Image (cartoon, rainbow, N blue to C red; front, side, top):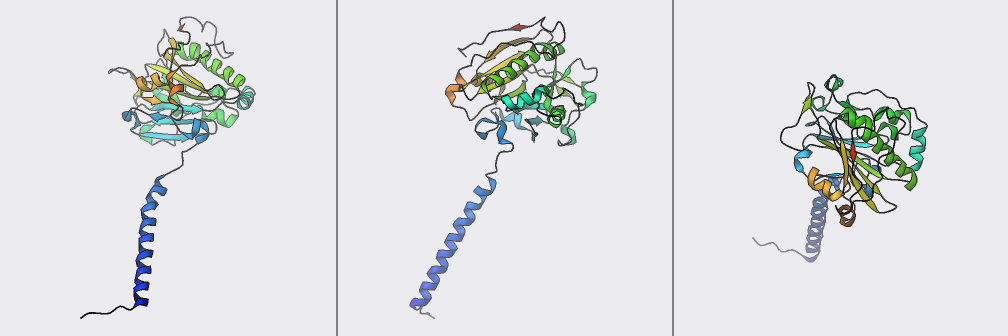
Length: 291
């Protein structure tokens, strides 16, 4: 039986269809909005973009931890930091100079238990608990204590950690004071097929450690890279070289031209934390601008 639809009924049906189409389009848009999550602790990253893991294998079992003065990406595979990012300024470093350097190393309970390093892992290992973001950059007591999380550590050879590495930290601190601000990302590199580990949790020992520096005022960037051995040697490379070799881009928001050229990073300078004799047994190459 045929049913005749009058004009008013037809208009009502058309309006209902139009509303249904608008509702469907709105529902389709919801997932895009819901999954566009804001970046955690963006103040530590140029352009608000955290370091990118160019090598996807590094991204397994990772946890991003935000702290008062730094952010760290901890790895449940290496049981340490993959990268640790900070944004030192002249003001924050002035506050840090007035903060006593003290703190207690501790496991980070924000990580799943299986992904944590423990104090026992480092005992009698022959390696230091090497800060990635240094405690000397922390502007107050709470930030200082947060920097002693084992999630911010990697095993470092004492000759590197207490000598040349500390002098590089001091040089970067001095540069940040002169320039007004820097963005700094520090992390380990694991090269080769046979890596050493320490402790019951098998904390991986990096073959080298690196510190990437971006100077937003000058628009330049570069990376210190140091062999993690008892005979440490350090040199400088471009951000692009670090990303290609290590698999981590510390500054994904930067233009490619800045990444391709290594800035003239300052040479290491003595730190008042350095023990006597720490200048011996190391080599440092002057910055290379052809990277």
